[in-house]
Length: 242
Image 1 (cartoon, rainbow, N blue to C red):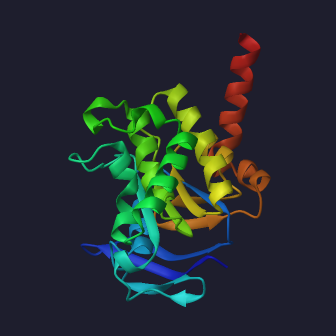
Image 2 (image 1 turned 90 degrees about the vertical axis):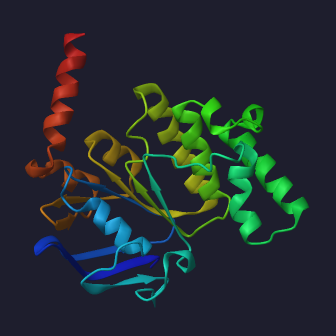
Image 3 (image 1 turned 60 degrees about the vertical axis):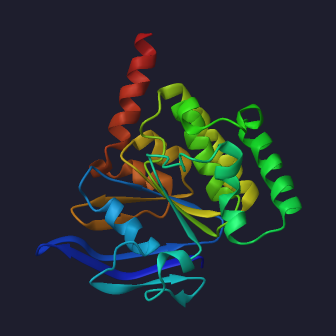
């Protein structure tokens, strides 16, 4: 098992935001976590990444307890909807950053980054600075910076939430193709029902600090509290009207 959380609980100012959260994520799988704003999704990701320390419970990566490891040693990449690029570096150097930290040889860095720029559709943007990029291009660079170090686990916190519908669809497809190729497991947090179904191998629904996971997508759709069936019916009705 790639990731396991055991009874993760956390409170802010005496208010419980996570209540005994248990997750099992197999290798090379994506689990979508759906829920409204404020339900605890982001706090959960930050605990797994080591940014926030839980009140109780364990985080295991590859069956190793990583509770006491700082974020820099967890080999986990956390991505939010804000692509937080280094403003003083161009596209190439932003993507190359993780390899340089790991002291990879220059020839290896050149080859890996050039190949990834091609896959991301950014070859012609390689020398541009972040202020010269569109929102979708910035998120592609952010995604490339994560992929280049080939982490076993990525935590994605509504990564495409700020993008327009067309760019978002492009990024969803790119994401699915790239994590499959790089064999990366991920937790994909979203409040969009369609995105949760599209992106995932498995789905969890978070509400008021509680997480319920489903054995398959149909079980998720059948659960009225997720709103999935209602949304599917809405889009079917809209298609009929058109």
